[in-house]
Length: 158
Image 1 (tube, rainbow, N blue to C red):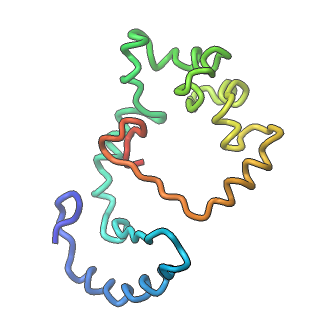
Image 2 (spheres, rainbow, N blue to C red; image 1 turned 60 degrees about the horizontal axis):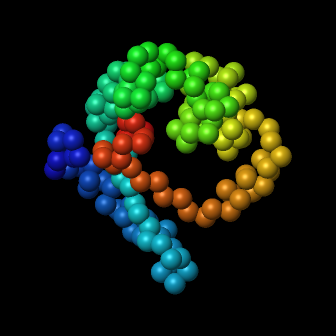
């Protein structure tokens, strides 16, 4: 049996997990109570650390906070080293990409200048923090989907 990345999976693993399938079906909500269909993700059971070698190579190549190559058309020189100066300025916080920017090399600027991400993540106190947290906790089910053609989350496997 082939896995997602072409490695062979032992058939014994599959046979050992088959008895647990009824338990998963019992845990699924009844159709009349819930308006969503449950999705069971089992790739963590069958994958090994070998499966994530491409992801680890990409993270090591791109660095801690992602790839900024897509912005080089706007800022052709010294992109990585100077983007924080633009994003953490009052003018830069008006751009959506800068609202979501967290440069771990400049945490002090991020915490003091970020007008959205530091607030929504609860990393800086603000008057709406309690209300925002309460509203987020009201979300019953959250499904996040990504793929190789996403283009926003880099690497998409993260």
